[in-house]
Length: 456
Image (cartoon, rainbow, N blue to C red; front, top):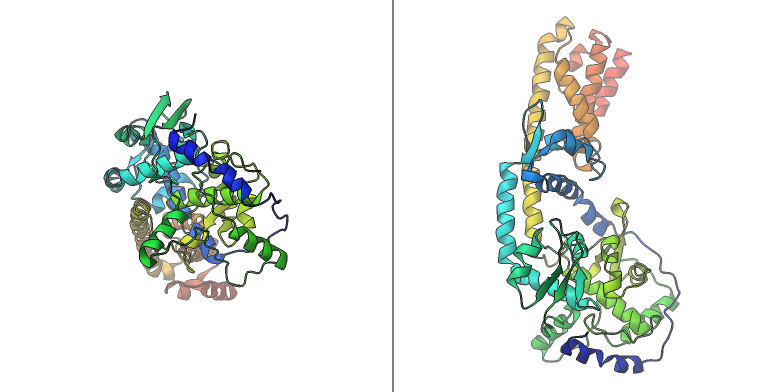
């Protein structure tokens, strides 16, 4: 049963149908072209995504404590490219690990401080998060969403992990929880919209038109911002189709358009409006296709909704990084792949990354000290041809090999692999031919090639 305001909005469906005769959506193919700046924006989050998944495993464990051997067994599930102990050594400020024989991972003091800040930050911006959640419910055709689907997308929309207990009860005039969600929000429960709010039932595009009307005194027609990348070319037929399509009236994602023909340009306008609004509600103005696909039934999206992203390259960009399709809202990013207007909830990510960087600097400083210690020992023992620093060499060789799995540490890994190669030459008894070279630090692979040449 539709709410009164929603029913009134549904009355405009027949007017939408009569604006233009039904025409089939163009079957012309639009070429996909890589956008290096937007791809780089996604790649920059690689370490953050890995670390957040690893930390989440510990935080969701009883007492926020988990045996390290159990955490290591979940490596494939969280898609960690290196061993768990190796990753924790590189970022020691995330988790504290107790000493053997049964090491236990638990939140570090830095992480506990971050969690306290995150709780205060969510409480401070609870009105924003409540309106965001209410908008999602208003887009739904049933004015309700299954709790497990909301939980799957909660991080994309900036919702706290405990949104059912910390956010929903604070707004009883907006939300009603039906059913038992269970302790992990995976039960058969729904979150319903209690009352329709006309102020919230305005999309980002409509709000932008209202804002411009306040400035210039004339309200422009709401429409999408088309921002084709430099050098991108559309065929003439496709350009004409897009031009005609943009001339059609804007269809709000909060309007009931169940009477539209699914193959009509108006239905395409509504589809793009829904996808545009969903991405605009996300924290980083981008979401993975599988996450959006969870709401196909509620948002009345077809199974082939992902093709709409590539049909409109001036509105969206689809990145293939990480082996998953991630649509990005073009207008939200500048030419350097940076967000134009940052969402308030993105501060949590920036603080988490700052904690990671602090620990990584400590890790690199420790490696530098080990390298200096190894060099000092080699300086003392070079003229004797003795085998020294075997334990340090083995550890640094392991770090060098593992380091190659992360793009951001490639330079450090190259240097460590160079030292590892020299260590192997020394232990294999190449001789004193490299003694003179051992007296000085090795800073490049070309230096190693000189050693191999003389040793040969």
